[in-house]
Structure formats: C-alpha cells, structure tokens
Image 1 (tube, helix red, strand yellow):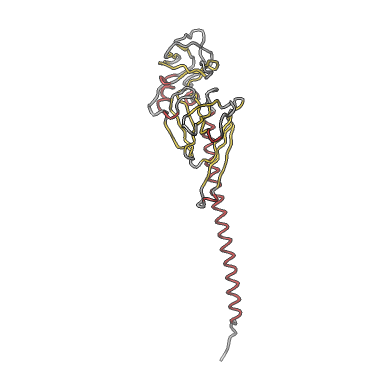
Image 2 (cartoon, one colour):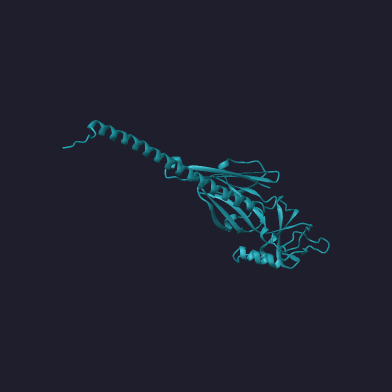
Length: 279
C-alpha cells in the first residue's frame, strides 16, 4: 500500500485563521470604497445641482432693469413683506431676508436672430406723450413671443416701457403701461411725462424665494418695481437649500447658493456651494 502526506491539524487551523484575517480586511476595504463612492456621488450631485441653479439665476438676473433689484424681507413676528434696494445696507438679520425680486426686460424677443421684436431705440422728434416711435421694431413678433412664453396669459398690451432716467416719486424706475402697438409704434395707456432715446420693454417681474428650505421661482406677475410676487406663477427651482445670500454693489449683484444632498445618514449630509456675480 502507498501512503500520501496530508496537512496537519495545526496547518489547517493556521490557514483558516489567515483566510479569516484576509477576508475581514477585504470586507473593510470594500466597505470603505463603497462609502467613499456614496460620499463622492452625493458631493458631485450637490455640486451639479447648485451649479445649474446658479446658472439659471444668473441667466435671468442679467436681464434685470437697473434699480428694480430688491431684497425681500419678511418680518418674523407679523409675517409682513417689505423690500430693500439690493445696493443698500442690510437693516435686519440675515435670516429675515428670504429672496430677491426684480423686473426683467424682454430679452427673448429682443435677441431674436433676424429682426428684434423691439429695437430699444425711439425716434424722439416724432414721438409724443401718447405715442412712442421705435424704428426697427417688429412688435407683432414681440406680442407672439410674450403670448407663447406666458401660455397665452399675457400679450404686449400687458407690457411696460422703462426709460433709463425716468423715476417715480419714490425714486424707483418708472414704468409706462402700453395700451396697444403696431409695427414701429407704441401707444401708452396714459400720457407719458418722459420720452428718451433708449428704452426697455418688460412684461414680467421675477422673484427667487426660499420657502421651507426649498428655492422657488415666481414669474409672470406685474412688471413694476416691488410688485407682489405671490400673484405670479410658482415653480420649484431646487430643494434642500441651506444658504441663499445676495448683495449688490456698483451695478453688480453677487449671490451664493448652498445645496444639501442627503446620503441616508442625516449626520453626514453633503453640502455644496456656488457663488456668481452678475453685471
């Protein structure tokens, strides 16, 4: 009979111990790799979402009519809303300010590829207090664009004309309501006390407001300075906002948005912040 050598019991126990040690180390490495992956994914997601939000805000703010950008301040006790020019010093605590509001000129029909809907220039000499002569304009196109963007709720008859040097008694940019228009001619709803070579046409104001930790965009409401944003349409822009700060100075509006991304463990949520300046 032939015999073969086999492992001793000690050798088997030693191998089992070594395999156990290796498997425990491997499991810990895999767990750490997965944990890091989850953290990096949450960080990437928060960063992308905050970047997209800041881009959307910047794209809308660049059409803001100077002098109409204001901070929205909410009284913590009464819940009343007030406005402050974004360039003025803060009069309250940071938590009192819940958003931004501004009137935006109609950049969609102004920047059309062929002929602009409204040219931004008026012929001062033939213009009167009742009628604005604006050569190079295709106001029918402006009317079509406004109706499509507003879902048919507004037309060019709901727009306002803003002149750079026209202000009301409160020092706010003065809005001149339009009654009707035809190509090259704009009729005011009431007689204008001011006509200037340059103008901007606006049909909507906008507001960004933080409500219950989420950032909402209000739009399609009266295009006059410091109007009631709650009368407009409302759309969720981004959830789980931890910071929304803003400041204006010298024709520049700076804002910062911080977005929180949950990863299951509420004690280890990821926050990403983006900051932009709009001229």
